[in-house]
Image (cartoon, rainbow, N blue to C red; front, side):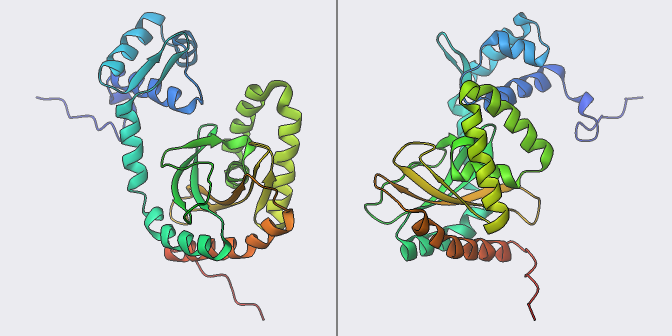
Length: 267
């Protein structure tokens, strides 16, 4: 009698070891903002160096990993194509895009939509008027989560365990710069708790100022951030703060389109 087929969805242990470990390698590389050495990956995943090398070379042959000379492994074009295809199919893009264009026209600033991936914010929608200068100009562009309004907003909206794990990684990466970065994040959290948005000026670059607000998908709890940014000239906090109300109004429209309950009417 043939043994019953084990459903991997019900029993992850039924997934072939090489497949499971290959995906663990991809996840570890994707979570890092920079190439990861084979030695680090092997230690992180509990693999021998020979096993790590064999699986990584197989993934590289298929285009899912790239070797960076002297630095380690990073995602290859095949993996990036899968990610971009996923971003292109996110339905929040279709709902938010026309609202973002309307907001950009009204406030005369570009409007971004991004999601947290590892220690970075991955941009996947942009609304801008002709001639506006933007920080991230293409789908799939990445910016640091710890030094942007988008990133601070996303951190604020994360469930506590994910937020704590991300902050621990940011602390390790920042080294001696962490106290200043931590203070900036704390200031953003206080503003987000009070106003629903945060303003970050000069953290990413001296000439970049932005306002960001988090959005949590009411269907599955996925975290996103919207932001409006100004680049290349001095921007006063009051001007960005004035963008807060229309930005939050747009988020409520996106939420309503995705099924979020309407706020109760005040007496």
